[in-house]
Picture (cartoon, rainbow, N blue to C red):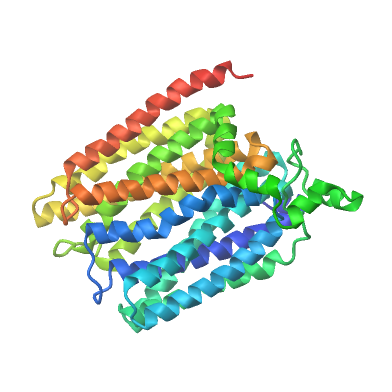
Length: 459
């Protein structure tokens, strides 16, 4: 880490932008959970919970391809700055609406905009990282960033729980916690100003990565009076509009032409679908814990489960720099998927089969162990995908691919929750849903194996 920072001083600033954003995201989302999912002043059923996830993620998913196209045409430094400033305004507006006791529709509309901007910032940071860091550091640095980012997100969520615990679990406490989450975006905006214009990309087609500190091609074009800088720095022309409109298909084509990126996308997608169903199960089960349950209930119990998942992500981040180079990207994805099948059948299934308080208490403990292992397996797959996208995708398409990932997988996550909400009992116990999740992971394993044969034929 010290060597990478010494060689690439811009990495530290970019990393802190991500850390501050993760802290704010963790605090904002935990505060929203307190306001919507576990608020005694508001009633929620499975469909209401699914609706909350839908309005938070689906609208951004519909505009994600356009955001990706802009990340690959506009100065990413300016995008990070403006997005953080916009997020501050949206957070304060959401806090005001929540404190006023307004019904959920305006609150969720503001929340979906806030989370959408946060995703935009996250995609921008990931796309910009290869512009300030040598290629051979990417896998290790992704692991370091994921490790520390998870810690900051957990700290933000913990801060929100503390605020709500001190002030109260109603609208007032949640509103104060939401407002406090704006501090992350304030820090991110202040740090984004410190980057030179265009240093975070995008570059021209074929621009090599792994040359931190090199002058961006956009800067050279600007000095020569070229048209590239005009396209990046001015209002979009018809070419830019066409690029925006075709962002989804362009990114999909780039993913297909890179077989190992395709493999990672399949793995991440399968995990997001099953994770959506498991998230709804966890909310419903932990909302009403058994008597004497050591996990606890409500927002506290849900926070414990999230902490277990985050811990698994930390372990995965520590293992990834050792696992991915030795096993390869395809085998790393397969290892994560095989582990997920095991977890689904052995640690999630007992929750669906528990009929007594004693069985429920044991099942809840197993669910926490499952959350830890799901965090480990899912993060290993995600880090494999990040490395594949940063190395195999050209800089002019990288932002679109990261935005495509967010778009498709947010849609899959939300649809999974919605479909599950239509059939799951209000106590969250359904063996059929757990088995379908295991089958989804098994299908992804088959697709990855078939795709690996295509990768073997690709030069």
